[in-house]
Structures are given as structure tokens and as C-alpha cells.
Length: 110
Image 1: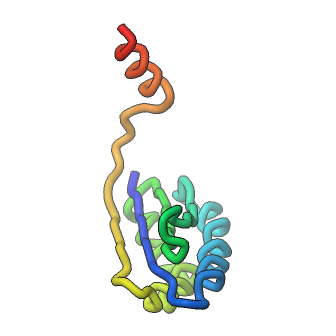
Image 2: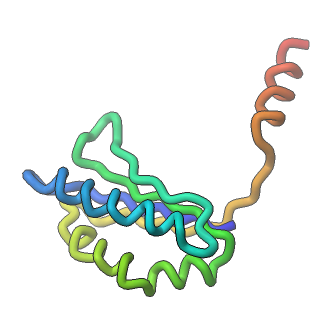
Image 3: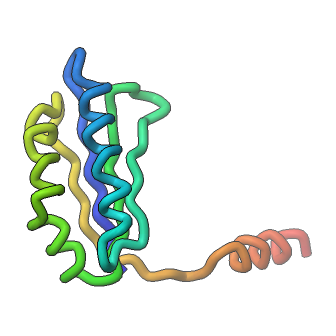
């Protein structure tokens, strides 16, 4: 699994516009082959920080997304960022789900 995380800081007066564009693209991305999920997140400590987070089955799926016209619509908004955009693309290994959380909690109680 491949994860892509993009964080931008909206300039004054552009937060809502950037949010609208990012959100309008997350649903269609999720409908694309290989997309596990795509979310747009707002930072609790900085209202102007916006994160676009997606997970893909394969690197090829992610690269197809980056080449898509849909993703290219984000590029002008990435360029607007008041800080250099923070981009992280990485492989993700699943270790566990709720069963892992519960086993750790149970082990702590013993």
C-alpha cells in the first residue's frame, strides 16, 4: 500500500477556495481504481493548514492519479501555499487493526 500526504498553508482569503477544490476531488479519487481512501483534513492548531491524504493499492495506481487531469487541478493551489508544500509519499505496512489495540491494552493491564 502507498500513502501520499500533501499539506499546504492557505494564504489569506483562499482557505475556503482551497478546501472546496480539494474536497471536490477527494470523492472522485476514491472512485478510481486502486484508491483505498482520500481525505481532506484541517489542522486543529492552524486553520489555514490543509492536508490531502490518500492511500493507494499500488505505486502505479498513485502515479496514474498524479498524472490525472483531476490531480492537475490541485497544482495551482499547491503553488499558493504560504509555506513550502509538505509532501510525503511512502509505503505503508499494515500491522493490525482494532485487535492490535485491544491486545496491547489487555497486555498492559496484566
